Length: 242
Image 1 (cartoon, rainbow, N blue to C red):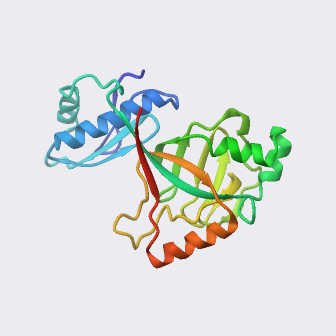
Image 2: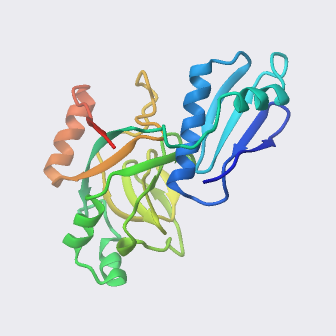
């Protein structure tokens, strides 16, 4: 696993880097450091932003220095990632595959040699770890995609993708939380809002949690959408020991 490197990022941010590749064990180290720093509640630290392989720490230089933060982190003990995520918090996200949402499913059949039903079965059989959020508010970068359904990005990105679109790009899958340009291959759509500024917590999920896609029909999609508009729908969440 990666060893910690302390890097500067402007005059009030530190990046603690654990490696140079996308790897679940390295990401567990990132998440473990974030948890330990939250528990330590160090005065002067303003925010913690986890990425695939590093943690950005924003701080108030009037209260704490770069060197002091590095010392505090070293005092937390070895960050192995092994103590992080003894529990998996899995958000079960309904997804309507194909229909008006998954316009790239046919291309995926041609590219992979798999049938539509096989692609859907493979995609919905994994608990995807949320490595990080970025690009857009609530956009999840998920690890764990089966190699059989990996797809290259579109050579010509779409100018506008509808919110809730579920896509694949390379070895990752994710959900577009807002209308946006994008080059991911679209295989379905979820009625669930991954970002809603009117909610108490606008972002649906957090890095370190997991997502499992649950296939639904087009009728189910609009029924759930109706519940969401009424404020009565809650995402099903399962917690299991690893």
